[in-house]
Amino acid sequence: MKEIISIAPGRTCLFGDHQDYLGLPVIACAISRSIKLTAVPNDAGLFKINMIDIDQLRIIPIDQLYDNLAPRDYFASSLRVLRRYGCIPNSGYDITITGNIPINSGTSSSSALLVAWINFLVNAFGVDPEITPEFISKMGYLSEVVEHGEPGGMMDHYSIGVGNIVHIDTRDPFSCTVIGTELNGLITGVSGIPKETIGLIGDLKGNALMAISTIKEHFPDFDLNKAKINDLDKYLNYLPDRLSPFFEAAIKNHHYTKKALIEFQKPVLDLKKIGALMNEHHVVLRDLLKITVPRIDAMINAALNAGAYGAKIVGSGGGGSIVVMAEPGNEAPIVKALLDAGAIEAYAVTVDPGSRIQ
Image (cartoon, rainbow, N blue to C red; front, top):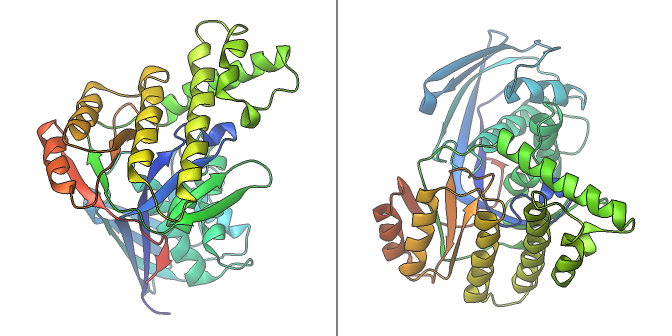
């Protein structure tokens, strides 16, 4: 046994917020903020987990089976899931966890922690399948979403586990494709207002699925993945007013994600076009799904007024963070504008290669 260091980055969603749980694609990337898990063997038969940044100590017996799960206890759920794949802890570790991903900010600090933990476990104790970034990502999704019956999707775990810029298509057969390794001019702005995840996602997902079900009553062959933005008026006639925004948002967000994928597949990226698509995407998130708050709106406006090509809220919403597309080299005045507009943090980020053992 030896020291194991497991690194997992945060992520930002470039296109496709509130899409993956509807079976629609997402474009996301891992970013250069991370969780670092350092594990040193002990003889106590315990995982002693010291989470320094939040001043918490967790002690888990290595043979704990967790027949019952506490809500959002991802340490426990991942141990339970991994046992099914042949990962059986047989020795203890003293574990120190630190990181520089802002907590509850929409850049997936909790999923990064979970992925770092899973990567440590499978490398320390082995697992029946081959250890690949895709396998680590799948275990994260099963442990966080499926095992707890939560309403989220796969974006966080695959963008963190696989890294780089990825196009994630959750349809059967599932695919996660790296479409880029570099995107200069990215900025993250953190509002300091805690995002709301489970309740907000549950409400939005429920309303979107209800709208889609209503459309299918009138158009049995309706396929959300094939729906075109030009057909919106036809479909909206069959929906009650309260469901129309959720359906319209799904169609429009999918449209902008498809257009963005075309841009990312070009040999030279047009950052102005990508930024313009970000802006259109954000309008849908703001005006139809209504997931922004005044400080987020002020930060978006400040970034654009300072010369950014595009900006949008990231993740579930209700607070959290934004991602900004800027001309490389022009990040500093935009960072200042974000801070002046109320952001508690703002910084340039680069694309990260993903979860790894150091």
